[in-house]
Image (cartoon, rainbow, N blue to C red; front, side):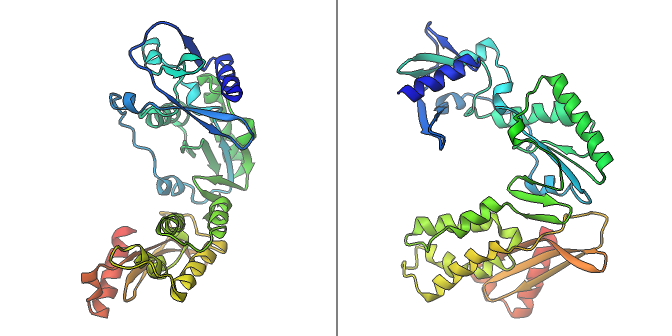
Length: 342
């Protein structure tokens, strides 16, 4: 209770929340989650309010769309907005809708809270409009502002332009989470550098720490983590088939040597993943595809100097009908599928 009181006091001192005494039309409950530091984080359950919230129509840029713009870049900077959503003020009428109740009284948010259905789109729209409009080499992924340049001079000019816009917009930054003028940065679960794209170490370490699954939910969790790294793992659909078969309701959970081998193979695969080249629309491309008894695999390659480098791997399993195709038909299907996907 003391920690909740301290967190509410901190939020009130920051001007994020305000105590309310009069009756309000809406009132939500809270959920308290402990932090590693020993403090707590307070989440407000705005589920009912979200049923009446009109979502904004703003398409968030995909990971591939963002990474696809970095070809040829050598210098990177990443800025992190301090307390993100809490930098967007709410109108008085909107603020009262976020009222929540605690054992210490009722409060409402004066700034955009986490949990509002339209918050990500609105925040992204504001950031993109105020910080990237009219600028080249700048994007606003969900975890901050990313800038890049082919040369130090180009990068510095873009960084200066963004910082000028940030100052004008009154946005504050979390210096501890900002990376300035780096040869590589972590963004959207990837590490980008002049050499190419590799998976974030935190994701690969999470896979390495996984123990052999003993129940279906553990296996499903493991496969989910591996699939997030699928672009770095050749022939994933073929390699994870023994484990995917265990998820079928038609099959009994009977873990054998084949499944343990498949698990260890997938567990080791992300530990030494290939560094993928950044896709460059101006470079020569080549699509390579393959088909096995149970899956399709493909890779998009680009010529860099005298070398063909992979930019992304993809794979999928074959349907029962497709598994009955002749091998030449499977190969044709694989090439057609790869060309359509890439």
